[in-house]
Length: 380
Image (cartoon, rainbow, N blue to C red; front, side, top):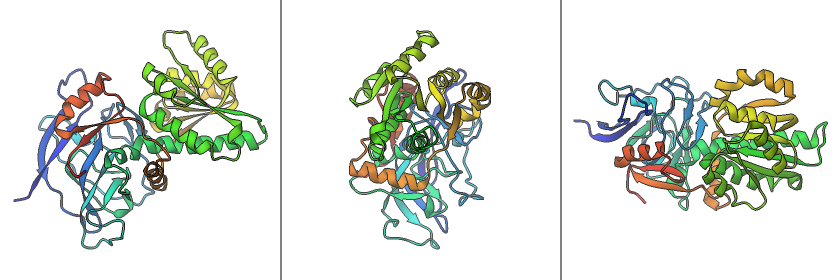
């Protein structure tokens, strides 16, 4: 008889289904010939906001999009087991933020000094990644595994593959836009970056931007501002004395908010990192830009709103650029930065996987400060 392991299915909460979290037993998966079986220790708690399979994922604490793993995983089909009879397949609402330990390696796989049985890893969210809400998952190839240094807790590592990685790639894209503004035809003396959002994703972006921009040769010509959507985000953003902060109070008129933002930034801004998910947020961001400015948005926002705002952007002589999730090389760099203490991760809380239902309830009611992480094994 096959050994069994626990798996958790987190559905997208809706008005017709009170319970959206289910726990059940599934067979421990066999080890792929060229891959590995992972013992999941931590997985970020999230759920999809839509009902269809897509490369875009909406989390209750961050918005992130899953990019293709450079085509190397094409053709790998991950079979799933229905979460519950009569309930939609739980694999439609997976956990992409997985940190754990290599449990076993396939017979034809090549071991390395860093990737062997017992190694601590984080999983890069390639296209077709298996859901992480189970005690064990399998990956077809070592290329999607990133080793974790001993000094980096696995609970923190679990926050890196999606939200943090997306924030990193957005900051890298912003840096390229700033270089054009400073060294291109306009040759601006000063530039301003506006980060729009709240919670962990915007805080990752703020800390990464502060770190990277200080290392640019033109760092003294870049200013950072933050437009927060909640009081909590306002307090978090105040941690950086050099950053201007403006609160987007939705009770105010749009004209007032735009004027408040440009006043706080010393004028129209050059680049907006927009982590908001609404058309109103994007519309406001566009109007805060200087001519030839750029708004960077996540893939899911781009898919929904890019066509709607194309004409508006053209009329304002600005651009909207869609930023995908980062690369595995960026994830490796991010792991090193956080492990060395160069980047401080946002707050997070760890909960036993058995409490997943309560965690989702709290997330829906904004009762959890920072990132929620589910724990599946006690190894630390």
